[in-house]
Image 1 (tube, rainbow, N blue to C red):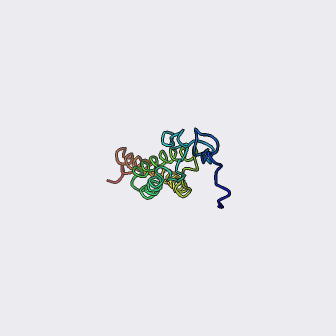
Image 2 (image 1 turned 30 degrees about the vertical axis):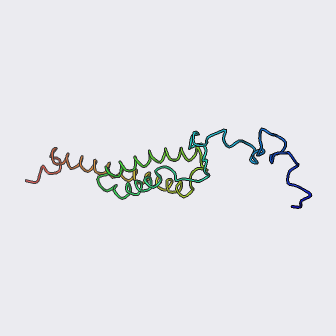
Image 3 (image 1 turned 180 degrees about the horizontal axis):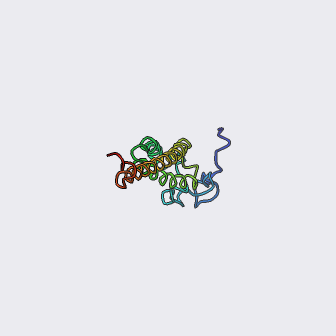
Length: 153
């Protein structure tokens, strides 16, 4: 700058003519010290602008896959894993729908895939459990009731 044109008029603070605010107004329009971003609910606003994973998205996916794989263990293990995954998926989907900008899309897709696997695993486990109960009922009736094996001897 030239010497003839100083950056500020003489006897004027750098912020303008307000002696109470020598540094001028915040260019973003509000005082950054008025509100503490850490006192707010972290699920409603993301102060750092970074996205995080949907809660339990990996666990939902793992439990969903385990529920399909373990449905052949008399249906008990698969049913337990599937129901646990469905409960966790419902909570995670609710958290994502409240504030989708706070979570990554890939973790949401993992939670959705785990939920679908859990539904499939729960249905297969339930059907296999019903099948085992029916088989035990027929075998138990045949042995104890004497229906099939009466005329063997």
